[in-house]
Length: 317
Image (cartoon, rainbow, N blue to C red):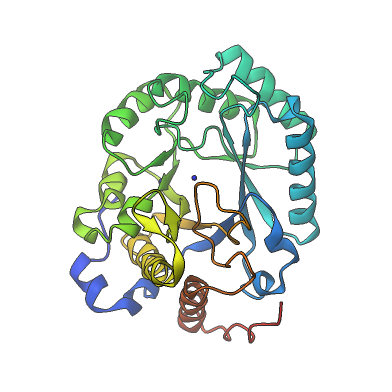
């Protein structure tokens, strides 16, 4: 709960010709989900998605319940030959949600994680690091320190330098981060929920600005159509249809630049009991929502342009 070269597709053209989203190389599509229910759902397997994303506390190994969840999630992805991207966030331990780890503390937690899970080669050192819910929101230099720790310790890894939300103050936050990051980061993550769900014009989108702010590769590490959240997204069939349109906008945004290499949609299935967030492609009762069909249509269009056969018919649950 994402800079570099010249924009390759003019916004107006993208709006007038949706197929243009597939004229250039289509991004790799992944799925973010915290429950892992997708691994046993044949309708997920039908999509041919080979990349998934999971968010865990930075000190996950200090919590047996969180560790067990991660073990199961990674085992399920490994059994299905699916590549996991693991992102770290604030502690889940009572009283430590706002705790900003020292560099030494973070390094100790990271090394424990890396020893236990050496096969995890895709890492995001801190999830939504600029968001107010994270202790790094006012400390971009410390977020850069965490990136430096993982960069120094994880040979052969692809590391998402900063994983940020498309909100105000982003350029300033990134400026500080970049001054403290070692080397020249070449992979960045953006959560462009605002662009997608507010249907911002492509020319004025934060996604486009982000491409100017940073250089290198960009992954939309968390995005999608919101069905229910706060007072603005009230759930029900109306907002499911709106979420499908937002999902389509995600791929128009991704088509603006070939530097956007991956799109991780969030999430697979809405929880049975709503808490704070719902952007699921599948309803709590297992019904496929309109956004699922939008994703399937995008994947089929990409397969057609690549000369590949369409996806097989949707299987029964």
